[in-house]
Amino acid sequence: MTYKEQLDYNRIPQHIAIIMDGNGRWAKAKGKQRGEGHIAGASTLHDTMMHAAQLGVKYVTVYAFSTENWTRPDEEVNGLMALLFEKLDLGIFMDNDIRFCVIGDTDRLPEKVRERMNYCISQSAGNQRGTLTVALSYSSKWELTRATKLIAEQVKEGKLAIDEITDKTIDEALCTSFMPDPDLLIRTGGETRLSNYLLWQCAYTELYFCDTYWPDFDEEALCKAIYTFQQRERRFGKTSEQIAEENSNR
Ligand code: IPE
Ligand code: IPE
Ligand code: MG
Image (cartoon, rainbow, N blue to C red; front, side, top):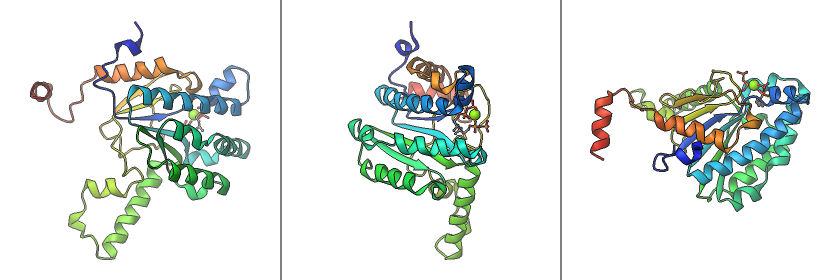
């Protein structure tokens, strides 16, 4: 039986975060340039968005380019920006009723990328079936620093008392305020680290690491990750017995 056939459709994660890693090694293994790995990776992103929507996943948040990725060779950075510009197609979001969002320090992106990106964001804002958020020029430390400044500003202006600051205040000051925390985080490409991605938001997220390079990540690989997630017990600090009782009272 396939993993897809074994899924419990009543327990599909609402939000999946993905670290799309392994494009470069995929290309190298095939004797190709790294850029070809990114092109193949863009196609995997398109397909994953479709599969996730079909499975009923409401939010998909992908790490496409980190703050640290700006330090890669100019040629690779420029190639990634050009690819982004080329692949940002409003039609895909409108045809599939998917809202497109971006999180990150987008001021650093080339202007023409930013313009096309903002156009897709505003035009797709009313779409309902699912939300694809792309983390671009993003890192958690950048985001948390920005949030801290926003909160400090509110305190300084007398709009917020220090005692009123709660974890919700921080949630709301993050770029991700419009989405629930991820239920499942998938990292492809074999590394078992978070690389500065959604550190606050993943406080209770189930982590799933697989060796598959991102361009080879297909529907069955996605279903395997979701199936693995469904075998786990999320306890949020409680005991197994408490969780069993809560489930029987549902
Ligand atoms: C992930 O693939 C995509 C980006 C970071 C832009 P990599 O480019 O990191 O691929 P590897 O890790 O070198 O294989
Ligand atoms: C993380 O991948 C960022 C993205 C997938 C966009 P990297 O390949 O840049 O991560 P590190 O530097 O190996 O941890
Ligand atoms: Mg990598």
